[in-house]
Image (cartoon, rainbow, N blue to C red; front, side, top):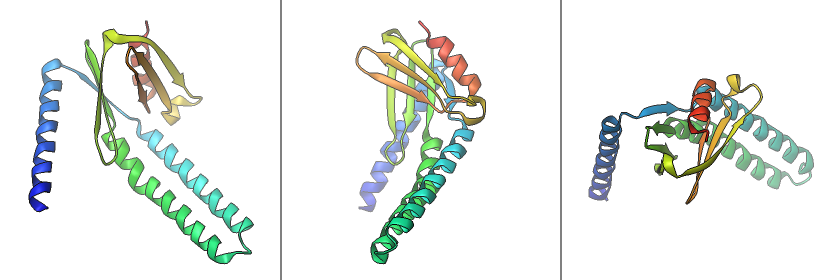
Length: 168
């Protein structure tokens, strides 16, 4: 299994190097997710987890074993999402934009690369939440012939730049 994992990591490294060279050759601009959004989502998960713990304790206090079991599950899920999942997902989330195409790289355990040619975009939808300067909860949805791509969690400047660029 050590040989397999080493071979798999070598293949992964070669793919990353290939993608990096492709980006350098095409002179693509790189966009990252807004870190304020990460903190807002962490806070939301903590509040939801705390609410679930309180509701579970209030309504299931007459069945202590079930209450404790569900509280452990809710706490573990909230801890995993807040401390492990969201930071890794945000670290991996980035967008490369050139005059010809846009590439979205995202994922937690498996890194997914989504490529869309700009000429195939039929229409776009831009969603800016209230207080988008503080939260970073901005989305640009690109609809193309064969599917769609969501560009999410951008800071206000990047959101406005990409919204204007993809406007048809």
